[in-house]
Image (tube, rainbow, N blue to C red; front, side, top):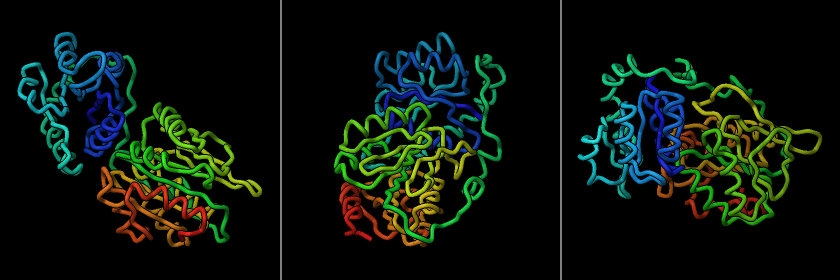
Amino acid sequence: MYTVIVIDDSLSMRKILRDMINSIDEFEVIDEAVDAFDAREKIKKYEPDLVTIDINMPKMDGVTFLRNLMRLHPMPAVVISGEGARGNDIFDDGAVGYIEKPDNGESMSSFQERVKDNLLNLTFLLKRYTLKKPKAEVEIKKKSNFESSEKVHPDILLPSTPARLSGSRVIAIGSSTGGVESLLRVFKSLPNNLPPIVITQHIPYGFSRSFAQRLNNESSLDVYEAEDGMKLEKGKAFLAPGNMHLSIEKKGSDYYTKLIDGIRISHHKPSVNIMFRSVNNVIGSSAMAIMMTGMGDDGMIAMKELFDNGAYTIAQNEESCVVFGMPKKAIEAGAVKDIVPLDDIAQYMVDFSTNKKR
């Protein structure tokens, strides 16, 4: 397993690259850095086998950082940037690879293939580097072969026990690649009188709290990073922490958040499958489930369970998705009632809350 640190000041691009690189056999993103100074400390701490570097970054541009890195700590580096004109010069500065970021006309699947091809072509060089690289300050616990190659079914962590009686209305949203910006667009248009909302966005640990705060600041809802035992109430939304599965449970006549610290499900922690399944187990047909942009198929299994139990399910349409992976898989599984453009999702949520959409 070759370890990677992604260096980019864009949260969404770091998330895209993390997902893409983690989907490649023998590669694992162990951390991310927002600028050159953050990267310097993390490289020293973890001694990755490879770094990816953006050119346009605050504090120190990527080219200057690359030159300093090759002078002080030479190691394999791939530049991933939108500045195609500088591509050839990057190799003179010490990079072993250059990948141009996608323009508006390129699909994410095409970009993913370019990333994959580039990294797989470097495995011989990386193998040689790992034999002589410096020792890390912190031992990296790499994913086991089981975790990295096998997709773990939600049954392993949370059995399916569908609710037979309808509970209170709850809206559940699952998203991944491209979800940060998409959720912000939706939440800016939401009123503050909606049923409680639970969200699982695939996001690295350490970023979920700040993202919840950003959602809170830019919407009329009260948005929280979920903690154990938070009561689900009207006008409130709860975002899964970046290192825990979010589920809900019923106590008496009320509903509460419950965090689960378990293995990755469908390659993710938090997993949309776990959240959707818990909603189906507790709320059942009174729930609304929304599948938004994202890579892979996390959430497909439990969304189909919700659909079969009478819940109202929608998926973001292909044209408005950054990556049409998770919605596509849910649609193909027969788990979706309506396919909706991103800018219409907020209105569908409002209509659901007033019983206009079922």
